[in-house]
Length: 223
Image (tube, rainbow, N blue to C red; front, side, top):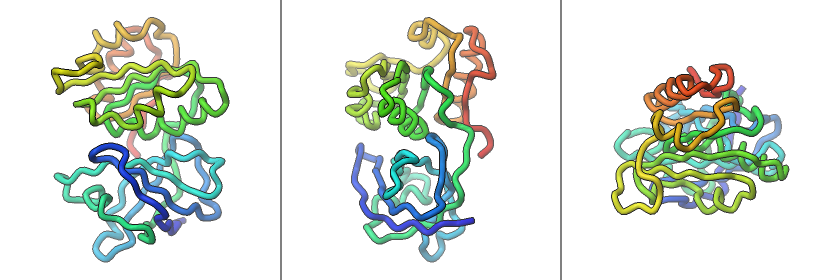
């Protein structure tokens, strides 16, 4: 089953990331953290679908929100995102995905891999039951998506890692085994991991070496 979504609003979140708000059609149901494959309803682009995560909550009956990073060098769908105007339409598939809310835990994100965690953390904040830790890795400070919102979430511990900027006020480095061992004291908990596949694989291996149970490491595999 497919759905036609109409863009209501688009605005920048960072220098290369945008928040898109669409109308929400009847029957478009999802869990926090899930995504949909959608394609631009434009000539030559209807078969070029990509997976994007809903960052709005399932209870937001009047809208669907996405936070999408644009990659001009990829010459694909995300390159065209900044040029979209209200009224543009996309064709979306039924939502799916393995990253959903498994309760409090540590969320480890790399760049645009933060998107499945936005709705999950918003849901926890709305319920007033946060007790979560966000470890968010980016190349530079200007790449950090929705930092002000995360900082304002009561009960959310945040650790921002910056890898390619010398004059940062945040922790310099990447989420490798040594870094994770310095940031996390309890490995008997749920870990959510999302980002570039190479990072996800390395973080999963590091967590297991540090004592985390594989069945408590939530990732998006093969979707």
